[in-house]
Image 1: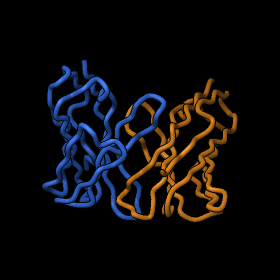
Image 2: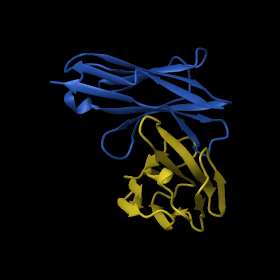
Image 3: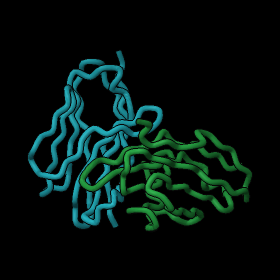
Image 4: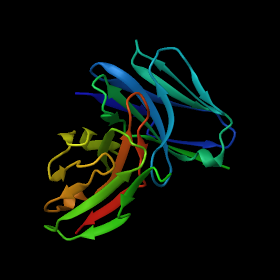
Length: 112
Length: 111
């Protein structure tokens, strides 16, 4: 059975800190790993990772995948209060069809 | 460009009632899916579709039916609502090799 585990489940930091969120997975015939940010409503897309060792960056956010050790990390530098959200990690198997398996999410709170 | 549109946003049902959650997308995506989100459990796949006329079960399909008569629409039917179906429901759409786009969600309470 495919499985995704995120850690920590909850994290509280001060504005300006750097945070690292973790995602480990077990999936049959891995195709991709995705990170989403969820504030009050719909998850919004951050990154899709398919290859090991290639960092993807968007502003203060970056992510990398290790297909040998079966994990990914999401880094956020110089955090802002607007980064407060639940961060979701999901994996897709080779059968595609966007049958995503999600982790529990990490609730990140940035205090001013 | 509306993206993925879900209706209604909120719904309260009595146990045993039936209803349909609507989902429409205007991006011509071949894939559509329904997830439910419960506290502490992330999102879980209910049903999915790879194209018009083709649907299949996800991880938690019991109590739900779907059909896909057009590319744009993918309604989710609850035949006889139960309190265990109290949840937030998300519809998503996407295409091969790309990310899934999510609707704004429907918060359903079954009393």
